Image (tube, rainbow, N blue to C red; front, side, top):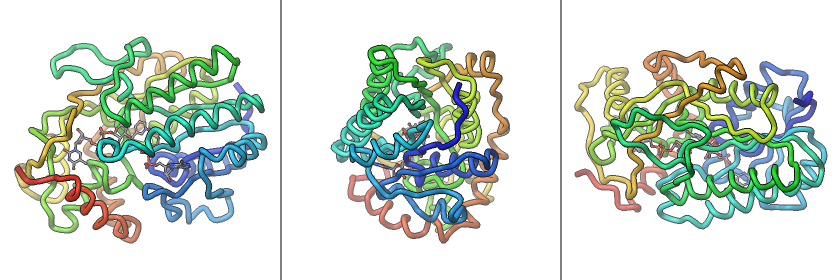
Length: 338
Ligand code: NAD
Ligand code: TDX
């Protein structure tokens, strides 16, 4: 483990990255924080505005090798969140996914190799493909990679680059593969914020396919505490799976959101299914618990969801600018009520 004095956080203006920056500034105020973010449609400077000059913000692209090299040289740890993160977009236009997720990770790996800087790679459980609904098994760090979408295949590619850079060049890296996050600052394109903001707008929530797909929900703060546990105590070269035993099907999630708004459980629309839609993800987080002593703090999904609904109600100024463009994108991608 390294004592982190100056951390470089990529994608810190995105959902998970912004929560990680807040957690780090609040709980580890001795650490100097630099954020590198390209401010794509998914990045929002407003997510960090309250931190003022407690962080340094660099507006730039992780594919910019000279910039990345200069920033990495000045840091003693890099946590890499920046990515194109939305499956639906990856089906519509995969190009930026290959560029940012694969080439961008490559640029970071070359820089941490050159300057021997500790690197943590944030990835997803989607690299493992999907499980049957009745499969008693869950994903572990030995589950074979089997990604389905352009998004998950580019994340899998980036993970494989990290593994090769550890083995071939001795880069001091760890990887985490986390399940579906929810919480504040999540873009309104994603399932939970989309339905919350639809309901605030008086629009019926939209469920893909039959709504039987299962996701393993974790609060973003629990994910980020696990990332810190890995930075503090993780073993170099290891992959850690992060999950909080939060499996629920999409229809049940919609039901809980509707309940939060005092609406009937069937007050939603079925819409066009996602092509290649993964059926179920499920994480076995045993090594994280037994070896690193991590435990989730959010154990009651209903309570975490209520807190998230309250956040979106109170921060309409944050999400409103992205809402109509997001819904127009879904319409342009051919989404229709079934
Ligand atoms: P997000 O889309 O909300 O944020 C991504 C951020 O990266 C944005 O601020 C964007 O501006 C920035 N970015 C994109 N391309 C860039 C580039 N070329 N250079 C610099 N910055 C760039 O994503 P998120 O949901 O916060 O996900 C963060 C990471 O966590 C991703 O690597 C994702 O694969 C992973 N992950 C997400 C989840 C989830 O449920 N959201 C679960 C597991 C893993
Ligand atoms: O309107 C919707 N209706 C719906 O039924 C949307 C936007 C989604 N869905 C379904 C699709 C999925 O089964 O809800 C589930 C969750 O969808 P997303 O929020 O798009 O997430 P998912 O595709 O599962 O991927 C997420 O978790 C893993 C993140 O976006 C990824 O970045 C992360 O790697």
